[in-house]
Length: 513
Ligand code: SAH
Image (cartoon, rainbow, N blue to C red):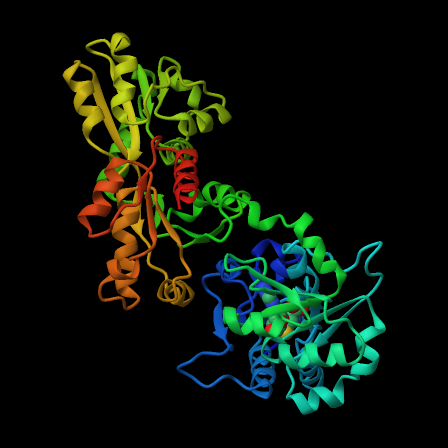
């Protein structure tokens, strides 16, 4: 069997967009991914569903894998012919033990690449508004490990030299040694008034910063019970934070928000949450696909056999549009054969995807529910007309019924199916248990019921309880009703049943908090 290859990839500090292009490429194409807790949870969503995911980080219920075991694991996977991604927090060469991993790979003749990452030593301070160098304040910086037993720290770090060698000192893995570190720095000549900052879980929803001086930082850490992982920055640059802090000022800062809609539709919502400083976490509980039920396919074939006969094509969702065009393609129907039909769209998003295909929908309704469509079209609907209604199998029955009342022949086509998805996601369960998910967005009734079902499948006896204390935000009243009926306490419902409406609702509850 041919040997695989190992990519030793820096994942960056946690914000999933801070991985390099090359790193992401390696992550996506790998057959096995070996990761620990410093690799941001969202990045794991980029792993191919077929790939093996191996967690080698600390876990309370199990022993932590020793470094030698990890080294061997990488070799074994590669010798099975796999492409392997060893994903590490920050940069793999900065206290990442990449040397040991690469050494054993080399010994076994396994090819590897080192893909650098953005180290937390620089990026985490930056997210707290602290630049590690500054024209007037610090022209150099050191990155130092704090994770050693105090006596070893004494031996491996030459405090007399390190203390004043550079303007800024950055310590990683040093939270539990903060007292010792500050004592040494003062002992070797740094003034007790020297500013110090600890930045915990930088670039993530949990980012938190504690500022003090060498004299008082230990007491402050103890008082706040400030837990690792954190980057410690020592030096005058820390004071820049007052003027330069930026992340905390974003409106959704600190909020990790669960996005439950289908993967294909999640990106817009996720992008908006990200832009506003929140952290989207995608866990798609529905998937859409082409219908393959013979009856439905037959109905579509028949309906598309005479495209010239339709006076209207009414589309009620973006998916409806996408899948309708896929069926036209499937049956080789030229869109121009629908020349007699006027197109109508429910909602701006549906109209926009039609427009992108060169079709201007004739009427936009005043409200975003199907009821609004009828109000705006009633005067132009004539008895005897034919309307084509391509939609999902879960669409509401209201629209065709109203059309029929007006004497319009409504031809309903189930152009796509919505199916439940319930991928195993241990990270999600852990975050829910630890209060790491702050809000959940529901964009349809099926996202509500499917999420609860998915959590049940992952072992939650009463999934409603897992969502207790999490803000529940619904796109519209029908979704909210389903949530309520399923034992969830809805925090807020969007005024407009659009992604922007949902975003506005997230902002509103945040500003009221
Ligand atoms: N290779 C990593 C460092 C590994 S050592 C890098 O280049 O960033 C692990 C230490 O990194 C942690 O104890 C902590 O000090 C720091 N660290 C990593 N990610 C961090 C984050 N998001 N926020 C705060 N500290 C972080």
